Image (cartoon, rainbow over all chains, first blue to last red; front, side, top):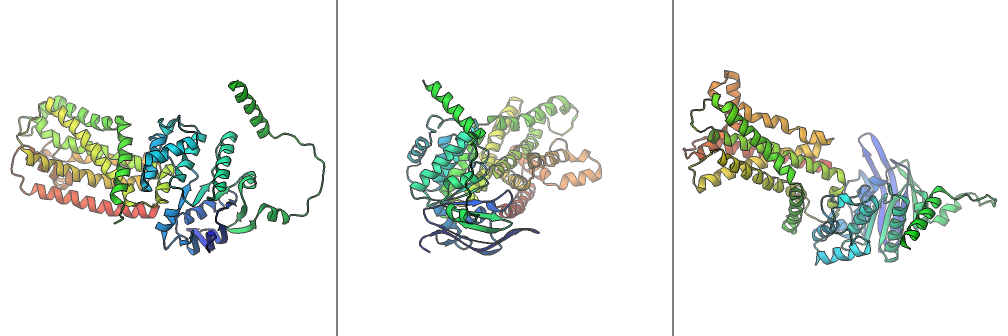
Length: 256
Length: 252
């Protein structure tokens, strides 16, 4: 109990006729990065919404940091933060104003200083006084995640944090998640991107047709497959690798 | 009540006031149409309208103010809809804050921005020859009625903003509201209307509100009109508030 950030038992949820979750069970240990993997419409966002008190389940129980989500929503909200699928930033405010707003809503001391620290950490100091509507997708996502870190919540939910980002911005987000994990924050993330789960997660669960069909470390999941057979295949670079190599060269020569 | 209600309210109000002041065009647009209408009615149609008063601007102003409110509140629906779309609502809802402040921030902002538009309109009316012998208390009473009317319509706008499926739907609801002043005593005395229209005009909220404001501004005894006007405003406000809250709870 003490070591569990999330405990979910027999979770069911239907939207009218459509049963999205048909009995979901899993646990997430404190301090680990947990990836929930599933295709579009598998119910990943529904699970996040239930765990972040935005939605009530039909059947089953869910506890976050030891608090039942249905019975103690305020305690849950106090200890978590959510970065939803769509950047939850205020477009008309500046980056700094967005961070100060969240710090004030979390009733913290000295919001401007907290904002300053996060702006610096996420490389947004220069853009701090610009309206968010002028930000690029990657900057917006960084601000979005920075807003979620205000007040140092113990558990962070990231719903498809890299969907719609270009490869560079995606690598930035991965770096942030790794830093969070090193700092001891529990991270719950959903993704459709297998590589993302492989790169970031300590534990991976696969959600399919309303149930968790596999759950474990990457090594454990690999064991579910027949033993690897050694074959020699000429390795072609992927387009992504080419793209990243070329931009890296460009920005290097630009700097020189 | 949540112990952080007022501090959260303050943050929410500050946020949406920034939205308003960074898009002054919304306040200008809200003031511009009623001002154009006022010019049109005073200098084009006014000569042909017999109101029994020698100063048509005085007669017209209350109705013009109501029209400005009816168009101004559409922005509340619009902003609420955008908030629901953008995901910032979900962020707020997943935080330990007094939830009702999320709506109240928008509602109070509507009150402030409509007040600004009305001050602009009254200034233009003064230039066009509007004069009032009313004292401070009468003006305060007028401000009170206009504030209640704004609140009533803003909660209707909140229902529209919260339940709309598209951005057009969020603002389209205000068109019928804009027509109500025309079928009232706002522009012409109801006595000239055919019986059915007249019956509607005399018993709909705009007429009693317009009459109450008109009497306050011209220092006449307000009689029963003011109570009927207040009853309409408060009644509409309560019903709209209850419905808005129900829609809100359903959506979040």
